[in-house]
Structure formats: C-alpha cells, structure tokens
Image: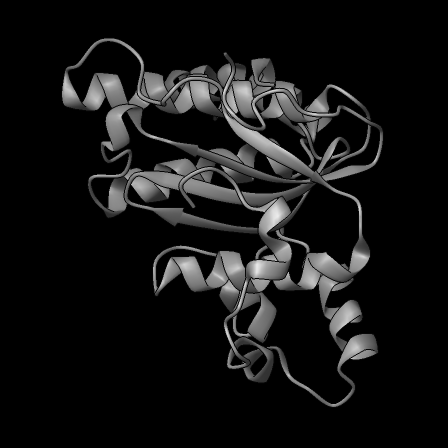
Length: 218
C-alpha cells in the first residue's frame, strides 16, 4: 500500500507541507557542502532565469568554454520561478521540510522530481555510490486552512534547531530571494497584533491541533 500522503490532492494554487528523507533514514546531507549544493539547486530552480542574457553570454568571445558549458547546462534546466513559491523550509541530516505553493496542478511533482534527481546525481558522484538516496516517493499534505500556515512554519523552524532553514528570513535577519515569508508574516500581524515572529516561536509548542498536516514520523 502507498504510504500516508504519498498520493496528494493535486490542485491549482494548492499549499503543501512536503517531506522526504533518506532511504532507511540514512543521512542525505553529510557536510555543509552538501547542504550548500542543495540550496544552490533551490536557488537555480526558484529564481527567474534570464534566458536572453544567458544566450548573449554564449556569443561573447571573452566567455571561456568552461563557462559556456555551464551556461548551456543552466539553459537546459527546468525553472519554477513562476510555478512554485517556497514559503518556508528546513534541512535536517536525513530529511527536509518544505511549505510551498504550486500555481498549477502538477508543478509540485515536477519541481520535487527535478530537485531530487539532480541532487541524487551530485550525491552519488561525490560519495561514489549507486542507487536511490531518498526513501521512495516524497510525501506531502494539502493545507487548506489559512490559520494553520503560521503554525506549520513554526513547526518547520523548530525542527531546524540551528540547521539551514528559512528562519532568518522570518526574523528579518536575512533576505533570501527565493524564499517568500510575506504571506505568513501578514497572517501573524493579523492573528497576533504586536507580536514578533521570534516571540511567536517562543509560544507553547503544542502541535496536536495541526497533526493532520504533519507527516509520518515527523
């Protein structure tokens, strides 16, 4: 039987809590370089791609052949800047969490597949291994109530415990161009006037009321 949430309602403008982990719960990030590569892939997929400028570089005689090879590879990559909005994320040693919105049904599947395949190719080459890295199909649950989005970001950021995450963007300490906390922070201002996100993070940590939107083994 398919695992819980491996089959997801696939709708336009759907917001999902997405999760995947390493096979047999093994680490998928062994050092900071692995995390950095994964984040760089997110950036490449989620920032708009200026194809016109990239093609101009290909005709520039001052651009090296190595740089042109990189540009050609980038042109061939899928781009999800107008398809996926990443609201929050965290990377753990053996899994990751995303809260994301897909603009049209099917975009999330395409995005996660592109990201996962590319990262597995990197990981297997670096560590001279073969086979799958992730434990089957990624899992995700559709979140249909606005009042839960805010609490899901708190859950995701508390999982991070200092690891790579969007927490700094929510505190205003960083500004990651491909992370979009604006909608969630507006919900905070409406639901908890005068409360900062840092103060909200310090509230009681009872997540039982958002249990339907959490995933197996979270």
